[in-house]
Image (cartoon, rainbow, N blue to C red; front, side, top):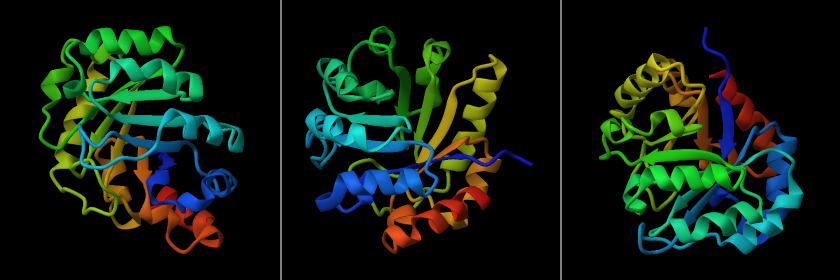
Amino acid sequence: MPAAPLICPSILASDFARLGEEVAAIEAAGADWVHVDVMDGHFVPNITIGPEIVKALRPHARIPFDVHLMVAPVDPWLEAYREAGADYLTVHPESGPHLHRTLRRIRELGARAGVVLNPGTPLSVLEWVVEDIDLLLLMSVNPGFGGQSFIPSTLRKCEQARAMLDRIGSPAVLQIDGGVKAENAAACVSAGATALVAGTAVFKGGPDAYAANIAALKGA
């Protein structure tokens, strides 16, 4: 039986008026990572969280901050988000001209390096960088907004990604993000995912429900 996945609540679905309290609450409720969706209104059609907000949130939790950079160009922002407290910096291949150099720079800054693949981005883009990643994030929705429905073909993509990582003995975390909920969490883990990003599925019901919501995802 697969191990329980890491649960990485996306604070995009939290109460923005109480962000610090929300971050502390999900850690207390059993979250493994804090997932931070950074959007620039250019690479994706939304604007969200800048490095100063990440810096302000960092003291509210001890668990890793997993920062998903949906910005282009991405390279000028790596240092700022690392200094703000990001433990993982995850980038899209389309967000800069030199993916290998970007991943190397993330590691030089002392963070873990991740690559994000949109639903239409093939696994083949990883062929020559897969050994340089600590995290592979598969988007199961088109990025830009929360609350979207899970794209079922992501499960086949996840199976192929799992085989790719296993073939080289990579310890990289394999993460799925978008429309994840208790009803499809088991299918994601069966396909090879070791971490699940969930927004609405964690934050629905308010702070009193967070522990039960996270437990449902882990136990599904």
